[in-house]
Image 1: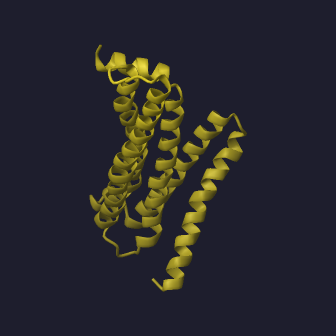
Image 2: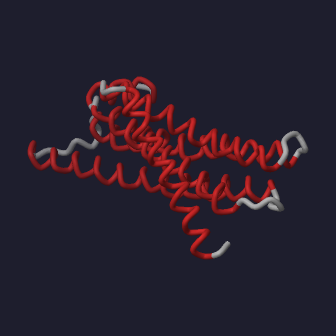
Image 3: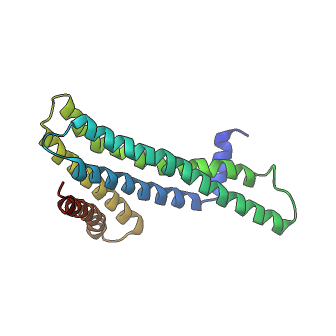
Length: 198
């Protein structure tokens, strides 16, 4: 049986994994977006280097995405799945080494980790894009700054819409909840800059 056949069979046996992957995708996407907005607000000045701002957004969130969003999630999910199989082996008093359950130990952590890493790596690139355009002389720096923040908040709004669709709650309220997180992040970093006199 090939990998994709094993994958489809495992997903049928563990339908809950889609929900786990979805939660990790949304949570880590929000982490990446909020971190990007934090760099926007905390690092911007009128004489800032746009390439430095872009690399700060991308570098920080990609490092966080690869180490925590992908590898950390893979290891924690793998540990949980191994525990499940070993508990099942104790119940049936038999080894399940060659069964689909042990194959799931290999497949499910990869599936969840990849979804976990997509948002935290992809979305910061979009937030950093205006600064790259500014570095290439296409956008004024301040326009890039405003556009970068707008992209971040827009992505948060899309995630809010997605959550509203999943939960079948009022879409407007779901979007407002997620946007409130982004606005709160902006206010907190602004206050921190004022406090430090930066």
